[in-house]
Image (tube, rainbow, N blue to C red; front, side, top):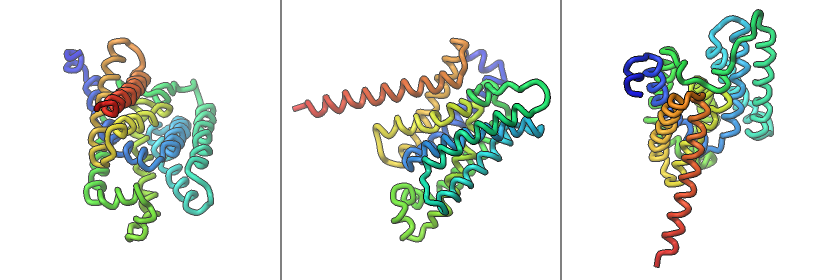
Length: 275
């Protein structure tokens, strides 16, 4: 496979995308798992389909439309959560089908032959472009620019929101910022595993790491490394087996989680049984 990587630009882009996507997953995925925002992130990811359809309808790059609807849904969910008595799961349950329905409607209204949406729904890491790589790289820079100076307040906000508010941390603003970061992360990961599977890529690495440690900074680092194993391993397997890359990445991650959970259970049982 090494000769293919060195020879073809699309493989080089795919590998670099896998590494960059894993860093995003390590940071944002850990936050999603610790803050219990899995359903909300799923709602935002499926809302992106409405933006993809809108992009085709009005003739702009579909990923730009996806980013627009992701940010719109993130702001809408944050605002509704603060001003209406409802919970995040309920909001996600409404946004999830709404985004998919709008996407189907917009695509059906698009003139001409219906476009292929497989790469947006299920992902195709081999189609990642230089623009996608730049978008992911810029997002990582922004994440680190926010994370490094605000790491301790972020930990306080994630684990005890009320305590954070009493200590002067603007928790309402933090909610909006977090939702925006989730929306941007979902958008840049669509090319890797697609709208339907992106929530798995965001949550599986952090969930695997959480089996072994609860230290927040370690979780981010190890989740990024775990994501790299998932993405690069899934990419290699999909190339060798000639099957869709997004599905293989997620299936590999699920197997890694199962193996980690079972292995940890066995080791814990052996330690307890030790005299």
